[in-house]
Length: 355
Image 1 (cartoon, helix red, strand yellow):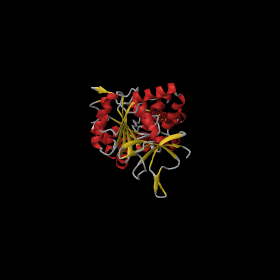
Image 2 (cartoon, helix red, strand yellow):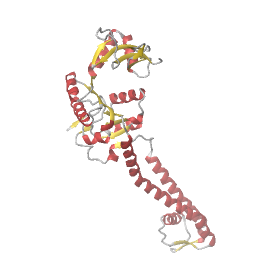
Image 3 (cartoon, one colour):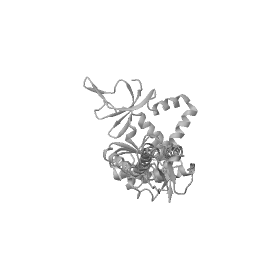
Image 4 (tube, helix red, strand yellow):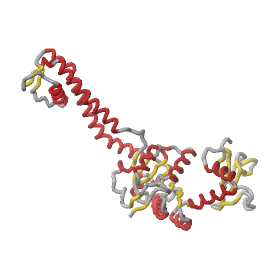
């Protein structure tokens, strides 16, 4: 059975039944600077070949001081052969230095080259063996220390936009984790500086790898509504206090998401349709909405608390109130039921980015 994880036209695909049995070091990918492994290997191979050529040249220059059990004068092939058996410490003894000058050259030039070659081989081997352990330790440290982070389930265009919005609002990149099954999406998330976690976001084991019990919010952006419901149910079960924001494509499924535990459910198609309608009739209004939606623009939507002036709770002077949230109810700014502001009221307002 297969279903897509990412939230819109992205190609990422979540396959149920995978991702839960993998090693934690394979699940969590910490952001890192891009590496070119093939280039690094190529440099090491080139250095090793350079050492072989260097030793062969030393032997060729002093070939009169070497003896070959097969007889005859040493040639290039013989010198390369001697260099290879020397750096690998095989030493068959069929070619050997017999004069004091060639033995001195072997001591001062060939022996250091042999040591460098061994260091190169051993260093590469140790690096390969320790890379996995180092990654595992870093992953375990992240899972121990991460707290109040934000989890994005699906790194399609909607998920990427949500991540950028969080960063624009002051959230550190290290506090954002992405869950996806598609390696291309995960590589992009890691490249963008976010924690990338491989797996099916509807599975308990995968969400636990993302420290779901300590997240501040969960953003669910699949391109299938049934996937969104499964992810929301699982996340809410594991963290009853997290704020969950989910998107749907079919408006009829909004109530399912809310019943599954989503604090906010967004109908993508309806939201885009409304923007298109606004742009058709009042294009300037669309520019204003763009400013409101884009963090750091001229205008932005903020949530503030009333302040006290002369013993009365009022709205801060630098904002223009749109709604008052009181006891879970939304009241428009001109609703007569608002009356006097209360200390526990939350004010949804428009603020200038320069104020």
